[in-house]
Image 1 (cartoon, helix red, strand yellow):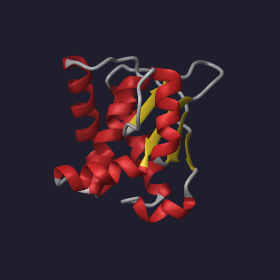
Image 2 (cartoon, helix red, strand yellow):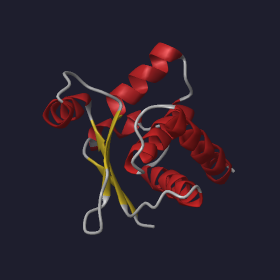
Image 3 (cartoon, helix red, strand yellow):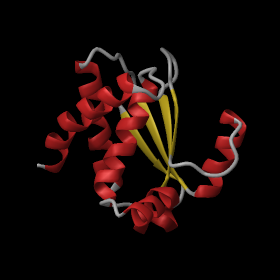
Image 4 (cartoon, helix red, strand yellow):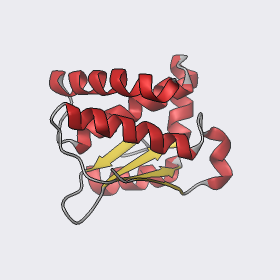
Length: 142
């Protein structure tokens, strides 16, 4: 499985709770868990962005105003699945909700994998995300 992390805000690298290489490892573990659960996933690109970038994408592709934490765009045979992850929003949510940044990152990436696998919000997606997080968490944090 090919996972590629592209950092569009190197000046904001201090916002990352883990190094970009570890993000690739987390995604590899999450996508492997999703495949074990029967969700075929191809290569994935993660773009680390700021709130301004994700707000533009959110408006353009989702018709929503303002930033969000993560956007997911499933791929196909010729294109990888793409995730946009806002480092600004990730850190703001951790402060607002008192969450551990590395755990929240894992939660957001699992959520994005669920969307890449074709799920919408709901019980099935929640179950897939929980499954992927439990399988990937052991591989990533040990």
